[in-house]
Length: 520
Ligand SMILES: *[C@@H]1O[C@@H](CO)[C@@H](O)[C@@H](O)[C@H]1NC(C)=O
Ligand SMILES: *[C@@H]1O[C@H](CO)[C@@H](O)[C@H](O)[C@H]1NC(C)=O
Ligand SMILES: *[C@@H]1O[C@H](CO)[C@@H](O)[C@H](O)[C@H]1NC(C)=O
Ligand SMILES: *[C@@H]1O[C@H](CO)[C@@H](O)[C@H](O)[C@H]1NC(C)=O
Ligand SMILES: *[C@@H]1O[C@H](CO)[C@@H](O)[C@H](O)[C@H]1NC(C)=O
Ligand SMILES: *[C@@H]1O[C@H](CO)[C@@H](O)[C@H](O)[C@H]1NC(C)=O
Image (cartoon, rainbow, N blue to C red):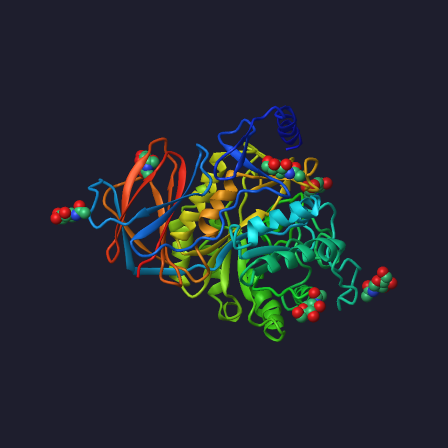
């Protein structure tokens, strides 16, 4: 990883001759030798999708992003009374109703906060507006790591005094008080709706663990119901108390990041191992009762927070037990190895077994695979990878999708174990600018349009197509269709919504298209 990250850095340094062009949509496009471009933003200039007004019935809006360079390019067109006769017709089937959307967002890691704060005040505001304001892409979900993870510059928890079982010395750190919390408050102030924060811990303090360290293979000492497990549950309550003092309350919690990492392998960074059985018993005996008797009884508790490859097995063990299941609301999934775990037999099977528990994407990023590591400025393939995974998840009962770091630096860090990855926003501190990657627009095609409370509905296609699509009815009754074409050919199609008419459209090669229309 070290060598490959160095290579990426060399590539970046040698690409200073890259072209700058101004597109009519305001994207300051820059190429860095990848398949597509980034849009460069500074304190005074950034392309914005802007406020989206729903057109009157009889018209519809399309938003197009493509490898060729469109970035949320908006067009208005007229709904047709008659079919255009095109072979591919996508019919909206509103009678088929599925899950409701919670939302979309990213993670405020220590690294993300440090990168954002490395910019001038004006550029920081620009970046936060891009993600959270009504003119931006309107993220409404933020994952907040509890204490350090690999995307930190040092190892710490909130209770590092040995044997502090009563958590007398529990305290938030510099990274919370001076970095993440002020940014979360600013994000909330820019947002037109309440942000849904959810917290995940990577490791318990070393003195609570079998291996005495934050990293490596280790789990809580003793047994569920014992003093280490009780203290680790109280740590969650204390975390919520401390953030509350800063006016930040949490919609959700996970039972901990990637519990298999600390169980199976000698992990090189912060991890805490649980089996599904020990997770079940810790919830039933410790975490569940602690939350229930706290002011946070309504906080949504998500189990797993790990690869969907582990479903439905993990859910069967935890949710099959009434003592644990009564405290649980959802199941968090990470996208790594999704290609090895078909969505139907993992997500949909789990939904069918436990339909009253929501499924939620809690982490995803590009550049994690050692074969294709780190930052790639302008990669369209990575935008397609996001859209493909989000559409597949949504079509298999997932109710939200959370990207990993909100912003990284040119190297894909900071990360204390040099586990560098990519992000939809890459910060160039030296020039006081940030680059909005193709993946940023990929997220936007969902986050901007699929408001909380939108409900997925059915679609029926007239013939076989490689086009990937998903459709929703929003709380105001308007409809959204999102289409991904990962092929080299343009495909024309029409959307038929019976009470409205025919919406003619074309999906250019390698494009993401969002259609938006009023139904009454
Ligand atoms: C885009 O890509 C392929 C899909 O069908 C091609 O076969 C081509 O068909 C195109 N569109 C769609 C959307 O299917
Ligand atoms: C910001 O970007 C715009 C558009 O490229 C440019 O005109 C302006 O000079 C830049 N501002 C600063 C402070 O660099
Ligand atoms: C729609 O089709 C009908 C019947 O085929 C035809 O009479 C009418 O002229 C068509 N309308 C338009 C606008 O093409
Ligand atoms: C808390 O920290 C102080 C100073 O760092 C130390 O003296 C004290 O022993 C700690 N208390 C516990 C319970 O660990
Ligand atoms: C929290 O909000 C209240 C009321 O809006 C305000 O008075 C208080 O100063 C805020 N506290 C912090 C720490 O931001
Ligand atoms: C685990 O990995 C660390 C380095 O990350 C190494 O120092 C240690 O020896 C390893 N332990 C085992 C049991 O392999």
